[in-house]
Length: 344
Image (tube, rainbow, N blue to C red; front, side):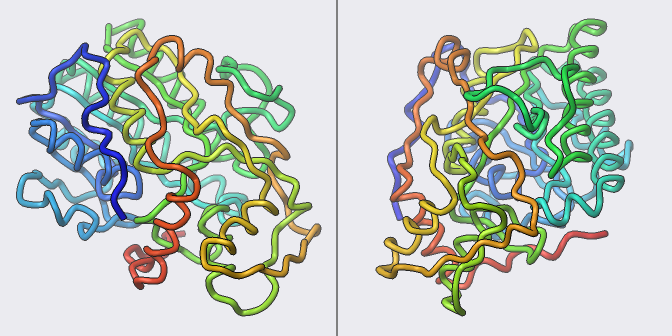
């Protein structure tokens, strides 16, 4: 499926040609789109990825033009090697899973993500990067956060209960980045993505995220589609290709450590989402609700006022209809098993 090109969208404040750019997690779901765009814009791109949830197949179209560093960024030496010589760093790499897995592995998720962040930031300070974009998460927000949710400071409340270890790790990422900016002058920006979906997702059983999980349940046609909780949960979706666009535009303009929500700006309930997935393949799925399972925050909706004010160039290029078709095509083509299951 072809989408509207995002390459022509720019803040006009930065020329990527010849820039030495590192994308951590660049073989991943969102990172691979970002790597492709940067290569096409003339950047000299390096990818650091341990391939635990990434795949080089996602980078097939640009593999010959990308420098690849294989390894785990919890290794300080590996992080130093990956960042060395780079002008710009996009830190996307993370241990990030669906709610069921995350709730059972809070310690592992917190430990690994905090270690990766510290190693990457130290390496960026040493390398004197001119731009550093650090990817946080909407999981930093409290379950009772107001909706639409503005960029609330991370010291207020607690992270969402369904992803508590992950949420804390991303709060630490923001604090670590802020201190690196204040004390060492690191030029940086922080982005809080909401729910991503689209092709290139690698389903990982119970560790899969909510939207891909529902797509799989509908397409498997193995009986009623089970939704955890009430089905009234509201999510603010954005295609992975547009997350990559948003990351790039924020990095082009922002170096003062501002924090930005990033989402599609249109919400949908999980029950309605299942219906939309079904209509994509011409069926009306039967839905059942398992209220014994946690449903996470009832409403995850981003206030995008700051994004639209500071980055007015950003606009989604993939509609929900086209994005769901993209995800369905990806699954039906048998490409969904590109990644291994998460390591416990």
